[in-house]
Image 1 (cartoon, helix red, strand yellow):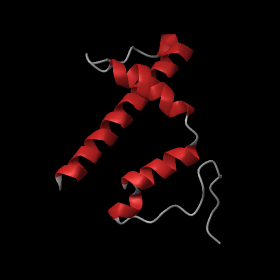
Image 2 (cartoon, one colour; image 1 turned 90 degrees about the vertical axis):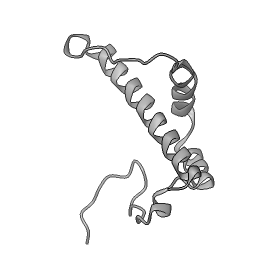
Image 3 (cartoon, helix red, strand yellow; image 1 turned 30 degrees about the horizontal axis):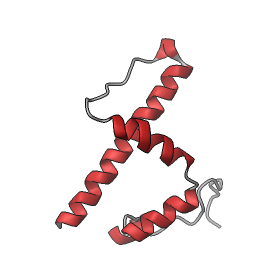
Length: 94
């Protein structure tokens, strides 16, 4: 794997990690008795305080454009795109 590909993978892993932690914190606020606090490593304030809120405010169409521009899409990995758009309910094949 090239250095650029490794950097993109690290970026994606880190972003997914912090979005997942934010989702767990939301669940904890909603159901405090049924969850335990998520572990937050030191030095991740930029990700928690800037990246997660900004990511949540950006519309999906813009996120897709950026992912395509950076080459961080499933097509680059040889996968086929889904037959439906995000938010569209699943329907069995004809």
